[in-house]
Image (tube, rainbow, N blue to C red):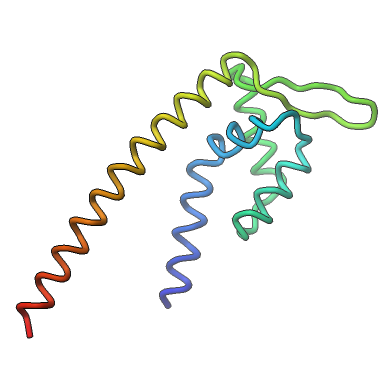
Amino acid sequence: MESEILTQLHRRVLMDFLDVLILLKLNNGMLSDYEILSHIQRRFNVPITPGTVYSCLHHLEKNKLIREVHLAKKKAYALTSKGKKRQKFYLACAIRFWGLWQTSSYELKTQLNFSQKYSS
């Protein structure tokens, strides 16, 4: 049961932050839609449909965060200057969130240890 809950939580986080993950992945350079999809499936081990990725790419392109680049046999996506700025903002937020998460985790562990120590 815990494994199932963890899988569901993992999928929810992935779906909620798919746009952020795509922007972060494009930091390494241009990628095709297939390369983005493959990376997400390999990295997060969560089944995701091509339509979900294409929809997110379309949304990012519509908001001028990425642009489509036509290569010889395929199209790829690259960050725009606006996308690079957004990506930097997301990274700053992630670092701040991680710090808050670590602090909260420490406090929670401390409280759990305290309650276990005195509940026996």
